[in-house]
Length: 263
Image 1 (spheres, helix red, strand yellow):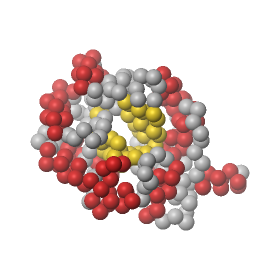
Image 2: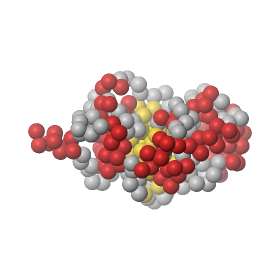
Image 3: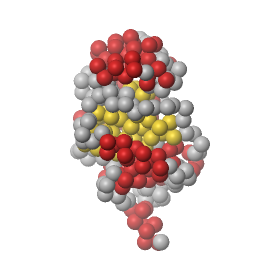
């Protein structure tokens, strides 16, 4: 099983001085991040479709072999709930053209109010015109997404149902495709002003996910794991803890080296 572990986003002020050296300007953060991690999930696409000038910079600021995933815009998933969204989808796909070769997956994070039965016909229409260039993990948060009917449907279509740890969702983490996509989100108890340090220790939970990944290593070809700051307070640390528990090499960035020298 190929494993790619990263963070949901990279542009957080609280990471300056804890992940990013303070001497590096914000414009250089992605370039630095991509030297440490192999993948990131773009959260900003949920709020707005980026201009091609921006995605061109994202492409040029990252090396070959680095990958992005991105969330579908909320106008597609939340405002219109997948209905009559073809124009928005094509505009979103067009925005990604400069970085097409580095986009691995586009995430359909659906609102908790959207049931499987309500989404199904619109989902089928959506997949009828989505290109085969990317993977499209579906993050259903309504409890109906975890029923036998929904799981059987997703398996039949080879659609990945996102595994997540997020407040209010009891996700059974069932395999529905030839890959898995995991989002470690947590809750909203950690304020953005506290990003950059671990303020909630979820090591036991990370241990659980590492064991789950070990269990499926011969069942899927790819696993993508994205750590959010709301999970523990510091996405890079969460991602690193998971790596170590999986027996992978600990990632060391400049600020971590400095902290160890000072200690």
